[in-house]
View 1 (cartoon, rainbow, N blue to C red):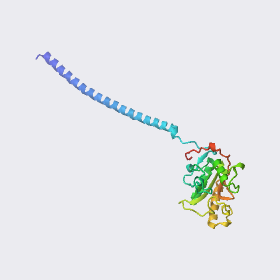
View 2 (view 1 turned 180 degrees about the vertical axis):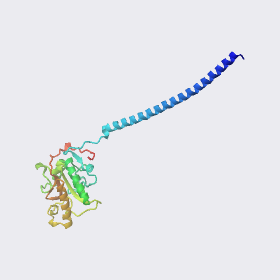
View 3 (view 1 turned 60 degrees about the vertical axis):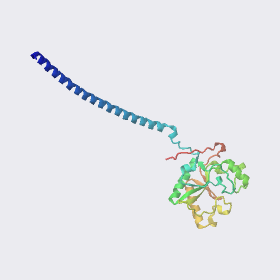
View 4 (view 1 turned 45 degrees about the vertical axis):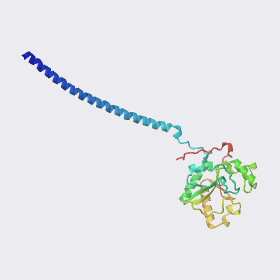
Length: 260
């Protein structure tokens, strides 16, 4: 081999070696770029998922179906159990266990004006501190029910004559209540609900000491929370804030979320 050919061969070998080295570097660079691109893609994907999640959360929170109802106006009728869930409900006129021996109400959940419910909730809180809970027998009464009561018992001493005006129950700010122990056990009271005898009045001289004590406890709490008792019925309390009679056609109690 001539010197010239040897030089050409040597140059070719060197060139080939350099090309192979460059190829390896290129592969390494490509691999690094690929890794970086994949990492960027992954980061973008995570970021995108996070953004989508955040957007989804925002969308969900802006969805009207998951937004709590606004706090009701004071005059709005609301379900008592939605605001005082630990009160015991025994809605007498939704059963036959009442003086008429008939089911008068077509509903089983009692309602009151929201302003009245807030006061009743305060009474419940005070009673629970003393080891008692509210027992609710009646609350808002439709005018049609009042008319039916009068048809059954047309005696103004016990039932309001609807032709001369409706009972405060029809205003949604009056409640018939008693108390129980917080474990649900009964306590002695002057009489049963809708007792038409003198035992039902607020002259406790003719009842036992326990009955008088428990009635006075209920009365003191209810009065402190903004209610006024009716002299003829120890269980009957009316909110000192008054409201107009509720039209039966407008009675549409709504399930509300408890306010903070």
